[in-house]
Length: 144
Image 1 (cartoon, one colour):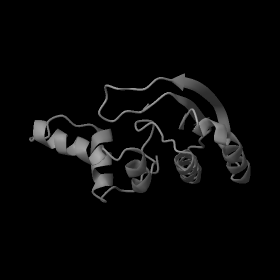
Image 2 (tube, helix red, strand yellow; image 1 turned 90 degrees about the vertical axis):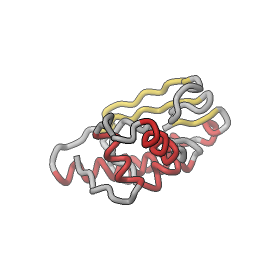
Image 3 (cartoon, helix red, strand yellow; image 1 turned 180 degrees about the horizontal axis):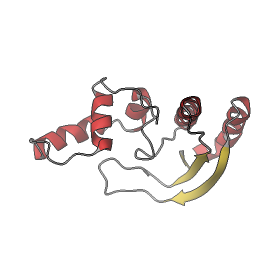
């Protein structure tokens, strides 16, 4: 979750704490970092001077545990968006399409440039294929 100077004063931690308690989120640990803007990347994570909150959740590796973790992470992303923040695009593939587009509106332009400079599609990854399908509305449910 990323929040800028003014947004960090809105008490997002209280909102997240209430959500974690209500949904019994099993937070293993969290870190808070101050990060400077990334002015070089096409899909920048840090768009300004921001506080970064990294949440590491205990995930039970059962179908139900993974579904719960996915729902927990999606709510965390929603809380970040509500406070003007976003999430780190490569941490996992559980963000919903609307969350990805809200946090990374330039993703479509990224794929257009990718097609232009790599028309044969030689350079790919699981991350790329997942987000391409997600943006096209074709992504399968990711449970793990």
